[in-house]
Length: 349
Image 1 (cartoon, rainbow, N blue to C red):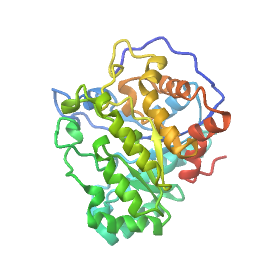
Image 2 (cartoon, helix red, strand yellow; image 1 turned 45 degrees about the horizontal axis):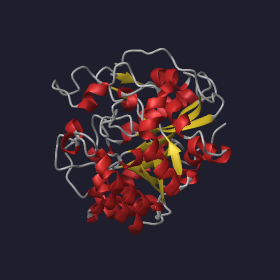
Image 3 (cartoon, one colour; image 1 turned 180 degrees about the vertical axis):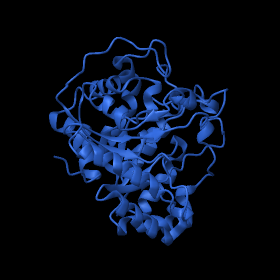
Image 4 (cartoon, rainbow, N blue to C red; image 1 turned 120 degrees about the vertical axis):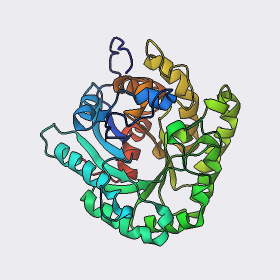
């Protein structure tokens, strides 16, 4: 865990926020790989539990968080039953957390008002049964799925997250399953690495009727074999972002830049970076996305607790507010809450 720094004053504390991307997990001792740690593992090594109490502590740390959306992270899968349906256990778990929040016992905040789970689209058309099970388990909160395609030939980039092969979003069986999403009114979250953006562009063009959310601005790289090459690859990333923005069915989450993958100096720095430093590092990526997609197709995200490797929840939102300082009131509303409410079809009190 990071060494504490004196708390920063909360910027624009009344600005409503919908956090459209966070995780929940309970991790048994020994669940992480032993040393030497990949930097991703090092960042979350001490976060063995992040459920409602921890989430609420972050949501109430100063910013006006009104609601959140949970993103799948392979938690609480069923221990038995058909293999393809075990992932529904995660939705059951998260919906229970959402129900606790919706009781009003914790105030008028709505944690996990939307749920994005996992279903293996490589099942093809047969994935419909899994998706319908998620919808039932979500009791009105299930909004879509994420299938991560993150891959690099250098396994050192992803470390413990490596394991899948290349080209998932171009796979014929995957696309057969992808067709079912629109039929059921579900969206698709995409996590992949910057060099893979052409795969998502091709997918978005092939399925213009399906709502697609690009996570973490496409995950710029600066570690392992990409060390020292982030600036060199920025124009490549930017060109692909501009191409992707032409697909009207795609929106982008502005965040995830506090992870290890871009290799900013702020990552695991001691003392922890200020929001000014973070905003300076992230600004080129965030501004490029907003310019390309427009505020109505962009949403700020926390990616917590993964992004704890660079900052606290409160400092993260301060940094995002600094990057948005020069945008209009309407643009800020879209960036901090409106786009997330619309895309994830949230009905908030």
